[in-house]
Image (cartoon, rainbow, N blue to C red):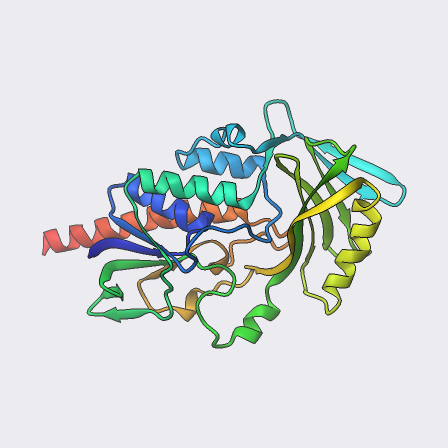
Amino acid sequence: MRYDVIIAGAGPAGTTTAWCLQRAGKRCLLVEEKTRLEEKTCGGLLTWSGIRALEDAGLEAGELLALGAVPIRRFVYLQKNGTKTHRYHAGEYALGLTRHLLDSWLLDHALAAGAAWKPGTRLRKVVRRDGVFHLGGDSAGTLVIATGAAGLVPRGMASVMERQSFGLSAQIRGNTLLDADAVYFHMVGENSPDYFWLIPNGNELWNIGIWFRQPPKDAAAQFRRYKAEFVDTAFSQIEFVRPLKGAFCGHADLSAQFPEGCHTVGDAAGQNQAATGEGLRYAITSAAAVADQICKEEEQRWRSGYTE
């Protein structure tokens, strides 16, 4: 079937792109290599600026509260000599939520707007003939890559991964006196932006993890060290709901790996905050910007064809 745009990847960047383009009247096919959406390494914190980005794209982030997300009012920095707290201004908040909740909510909105959806479909390579991208029996004049920090390609992967940051996280449930309207951070090292986190994800779930701007060889050992210091002392009867997993975050723009006519969004476009590892807000804003760019490009092509 012929579409206006094929979007590879059903994370926040891909689904937001589909949502924005469908609202602009484009026919989109959204494909995802997995057969179902799964929980991810991401800590599950959508900042106030991320919430505003969703609202700018026409999505009401407050809906997520009714689905199990929790409002975050404070950031608590755990230090050797005590704690330091940053509070949001009145009326502002972040959201603590699972990635499965956020991703499925965004996908539902994209499908409700009319996007076609093909899970279990992997884009192994980019096939373009006569200016048209082909994926199986489907085709489109525009292709959006939203496949994350690894892109599609093993080619040059080692050098790409050296430029990416790295995170490890798990989800737990347990008894704790920690406040569910706060996220907790501990900066790792003296002169490094690396940090350990505890983030409430709603429904008594907590995401615990560690982020490194440059992945070390002892990442898992460091996670265990800070878990023992900050989690095991704050929780009892800990149950691991999701085991420890790791993933790279996208700081390297992979756009040059794809042929002309492709657009990249989110981690595939290097849209990740290098100082903190925050990616959700940048996935959303890059998706909205690329959707707008695609619409303008199509309008220019139409105008050029009309004047000729």
